[in-house]
Amino acid sequence: MASYLQIENISKSYGPKVLFEHIGFNVNEGDKIALIAPNGTGKTSLLRILAGKDSSDSGGRVMFLKDIRIAFLEQDYDFSPGLSLLEQVLAHSSRDTAGFHEDGRAAFLQRLRELLTSFRLPDADRKMGELSGGEVKRVAISEMLALDADFLIMDEPTNHLDIEAIEFLESYLKRSRCTLLMVTHDRYFLDRVCNIVMELDHGAVYTYRGDYQNYLEKRQERIASWNAETDKVRNLLRRELEWIHATPCARSGKAKYRINAFRELSERAGQQRDDRQISLEGIGGASRLGSKIINCKNVNYSWEGQCMLRDFSYNFQRGDKLGIVGRNGIGKSTFLDLLTGAIAPDSGSIDRGASLVIGYYRQQGMEFDGEMTVLDVVSDTRLLSNFMFSRDMYTTRVSRLSGGERRRLYLLTILMQNPNLLILDEPTNDLDIVTLNILEEYLADYGGSLITVSHDRHFLDRTADHLLVFCGDGVVKDFVGKFSEYRAWIKDVEAEKRKAEQAAAPKPGAQSAQTAAAPKTGRNSSGGPRRLSYKERKELESIEAAMPLLEQEKAGLEAEMSSGDMAYDALQKAGARIEEILAELDRLETHWLELSE
Image (tube, rainbow, N blue to C red; front, side):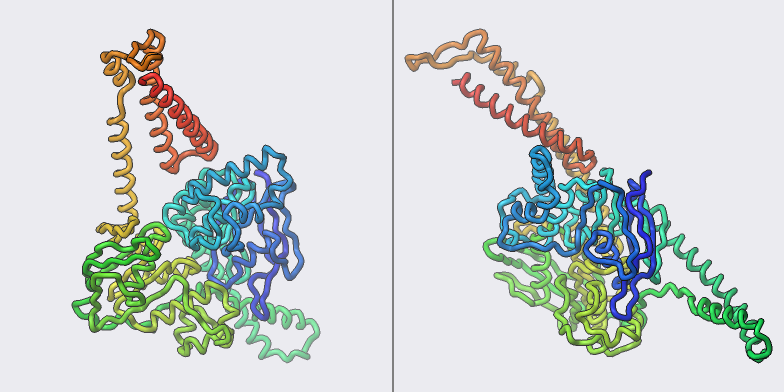
C-alpha cells in the first residue's frame, strides 16, 4: 500500500498546556483510522494541522502523497444564513471544483444531489438559516463526500446526526475505498467503519490495528508494561540514591556520569502511567423518589403549525430507563421541555410528583459566564479532580476550555444535584469515549428514573431498556426492549412489507390476459366508437405486459438502495435506472391512454 501521509516532529501547546510534542506517524492507502483521547488533549488541534488549518509549534513536516485529493469535515460548519443550500456548498467548494472541466463539475453536482437526497435534504433552494443543526451537519457531510476525495479527515462526523443519517454514512464509508482519519465517540460507528485505532496519550501517539475492544486490551498491556519498567527504574534509583548519599560528590571526577545518570533516572521514575479516568466517586445517589414521577394524559402540542405531540398519555415509573429516538426536528427536545415544565402543552395535563428532583442535561449545554473559572463553577476540588480537572486547571477561565471540557464540567454540575429523575438530551455530543464509558457504568447502577434522547446506538443499548419512538406528526409509539432489538424488528417489518408489495404486484401477462378478453375500441373521426387495428391491439397488450415488469424492477431497485448494502457505483447506477424507468412508465401510460380512448 502507498503511504498517503507522513507526519514528522509536530507539536502543539496552548500557553503552559502541552497537547503533544514531537510526534510522528504514518497513514497508508486504505487505512481507516479512529483517533481517540480524552477531551482537551489535542485531537481537534491535530486534525486541523493535518488539514492545513493550523500549524505545528515545532515546525516538523506534514507530507501527503502528491496529487491525492483531501477533504476536511470540521466540527462546526461555517455558513452564511442567507445563502441557499446549493449556493453555500458551491461557495465552500469552489476552490475544489473550479478546476474541473465541465464534465467534472457536472459529476460533482450529480454526486451532491444524490447525497442530499440520501440525507433527506432534497430541496437545494432552502436557506441555510432555516436548517436545524442536524440538517446543517448533513449539508457539510454531503459537500465533503461529493468532492470524491482520496483522503478524508473528519472531526466528530456523527455529532447532531440522527440514527438514519448515521447508518447511511456508516454504510457509505464502509464501502468506500477512501483513506480516512477521524475523531469519533460513537463506538458502533468506529467498529463498523475503522480498522485502526490511534490513541493520543500523554502527548504521544500509539497505533492499534483492530477494533475498539482490541484497543482496550492492547492499551492495558502497554500501560502495564510501562509501569513494570518504571518499577525497575525506581529500584535502580533507590540504589543510586544510597550511593549519592554515601559518596561525597567531590571524591572523584569519574563519578560525575553517575550523577548525570541519577538525574535521568529521577525523571523517568516519575513517569508512572496511572491510566487516570473520570471517577464518579463523591457523586451522591438519587434523592428519595415517591410513587408519582410524571403522569401525562392526552397531551397535545404544536409549534408553528407542526404537530409535535398528539394525544400522548404515559405514566413514568420509578426506575424507568427510557430512551427516546426519532429523526431530527421531530419533537424530541420539545417533549423534554414539556416534561420539565419549560413550556406548557396546548391541551392535556402533565402532573409531576411532589418529591421529584429533575437533573436536566440540555443539548445546547449551559450558558457559562466565560470569565468564570472552573473553580467558580464547581468549588468542590475533589469532584473536579475526579472529573479530570487537574489542579492547574482550577483557575482556567471557562472560555478557554475545549468544547468537550465544558460539556464535562456541565455534566458534573447536573450530577451534583443528586436528581431522582435524570434527563439527558444528546449527552454523547462532545463527550469523549472514556467519559461515556464511565457515565454508562454510573447510569447502569443509577437508582432514579432516567430519560435519554440519543442517536448513539451503543449508549442507548447500554442505558435504556424501553423506547419511546417519535414517528412524526405527533405520533409516539412504545417499544419494550433495547435499541438494537428495535432496529432488528424494524428491518424485519420492512422486509415483510416489500415481500407483500411484490406478491400483490400483477404477474407478467396477467393484466394483458384480462384485457385481451375485452373488445378493444376507440373513437373514429366522427366521434363514434371504432375498433382498434390488429397492430394497435398488439401494441396495447405489449404496454400492459411491460408496465408491471417495470414497476417490479423499480420496487426492487428501491429496496436495494434503502438496504444500505449497495456499493457507491451501484447506488449511482440504480438511481439512474430508476429515472429511466419513471420516464418509460410515463411514456407508456400516455400511449396506453391514447390507445384506450
